[in-house]
Image 1: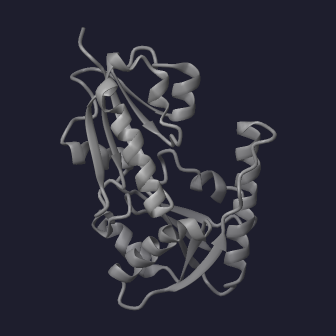
Image 2: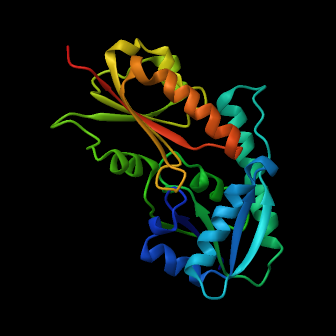
Length: 247
């Protein structure tokens, strides 16, 4: 039986890879590497760098092109069809190495938090055995970089997406909200005078950018910094934590 390991690798810093993750990378016969176009070639390069960092003899690398997601049929249907298309690319890359029994994918952050790799893996036709190696999440990296706790004492927090923050507003009963997958800086939809923000991009990497403060005072700085960083690198991964201000 084929074993497919989904290895959480943190946010791009090789130091984020756990010992268990290192062992899984070394044990793999083939590692699948996604390509997302020339403007995001650095993302494949970061995976290659991590593999080279933790192995003496690198396993075979099998590249596949990530299809673009369609949005004409609505968000959920578009994502569902996109996952089908990605699963097909995974399967094609795996089929190109018929003798391999230990195959791996390096997953940003952790496979369990706002990542679709487990749902995609469930669509593979050969029904491989799935093994998950946990990794440092972007949320953990963010709170560590700012040296803050994720929750207030005895209080709940919510992890959500930019789309839901825009559509639904501030979640009820939450004192803090962590926002992921937000390409539109959806904090702009809030009454910004009411919130504090801790923002980070490329968290844990040498390119790390951090901004914090009252949202109404630092929002423009975040927008400007984010736009420049994306233009410079061709891609950006960012996350932020919001807190309602006292009073």
